[in-house]
Amino acid sequence: MKVLISGTARGGGWPVPGCGCASCARLSPGHRRPTEVVVTEASVPLTGSAAGVPSHAPAPGPASGTAPGPALGAAGAVRLPLAAGDPPPPEHRVSATADGLVLVTPGGGRILDTTASPVSPPSSPSSLSPSAPVSGPSAAPDGGRGDACDLVLMDVLDRPERLGDMRRRGVVDERTRVVAVDVDHRVPTEAELARRAALWGVLAVPDGTVLDLAGPAPARAPRPPRTLLLGGARSGKSAEAELRLAAEPEVFYVATGPSGDGDAEWARRVRAHRDRRPAHWGTAETIDLVGLLRTPGPPLLVDGLGTWVAAVFDENGAWPGEPENPDRTDDESGPDGARDEDQDKDHTDGVGGVGGLGAVSARCDELVAAWRETRRRVVAVSDETGLGVVPATAGGRMFRDVLGRLNQRLALESEEVALVVAGRLLPLPV
Image (cartoon, one colour):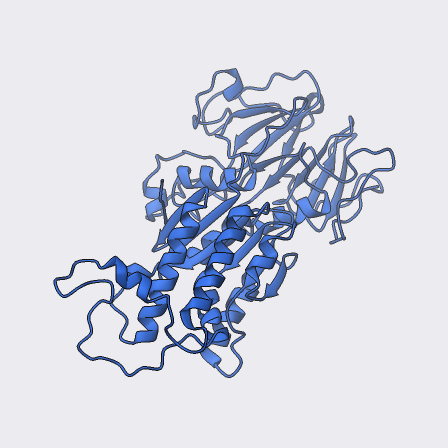
């Protein structure tokens, strides 16, 4: 089965005609044409990048002035998306599922178009099961692929977690090609589209690409086992962490902050985070990060290390009770502003309540060791503490010092570290 991806953009294309946004302004008119896909099992010539059309060149068809591809029904070719009310192509079966329209070709190929409107009536009763959530992938009686599709056309910029749920249910497996369609200015650049596609195991191909589904599907790019994302308040670091794991079949979200009981403003923040998590993700509100890191399981998303440190301070009675010195300057600097490394050590010994920061330091040691040894994939969010003003309280300065040192230690044990600023991702290479 061969597939010509003639167009991959939403609506009127990308750039959107007449749009003045920065994303559209970066591109030449006609960069990506409206989504159109031609599928055939017959020996019908398909033109496209596989036949010499350069990447991002206009695909064959009326808009490009070149010869169009196979027409609907010609020699068994089918043009997608199918319009609402169109009869199913001859000798093909169409099933409306919760994920979209599934087209079954005469040769048994299965194509899921998640962007299509329902087609009615079906050509015949379908043996395809509705894609309602189930506990796991469905297996065919003969040990085959069950409900897994050969090709999925998907608007991955709209709720990419749907792809993770389809992987969880076996609709998408390691042999499925997922192609990004209906692309538009919701993503700022082609480079960012390619980055997200790589994270999600999706093909973001240029218009005019021809796919041969008879060959093996490309393997997903390896994902870093340990990722640390740093950023200030409202920087977008949590959203970036969720984006990275959105297309995974299973994720365990670890919320380390308080529930917000008695604090309406904090409760609203917690509720907003809960509402945007995919329904199929597991969730725990705990500070037992060491136990989770040492337990096999699906990828962990830890949000975040700042609230974990605060909770450990609470648990160990480590907040200082001494009165403030109004003349104090940055506790990491001497009188002349030079850094005093000895002061860093003093801050971790015998300060605070019973056990003080010594107990906090021990907990941090345990966390770093578990992070180093974990076999689970983990993405953790933490506050970058060194970019703000000097905290006005001794407790604030102590918290900043402990979290800053913890960030440094975890960064040394991470394959990937990045800083998120105003929603922009800045990789921090070693």
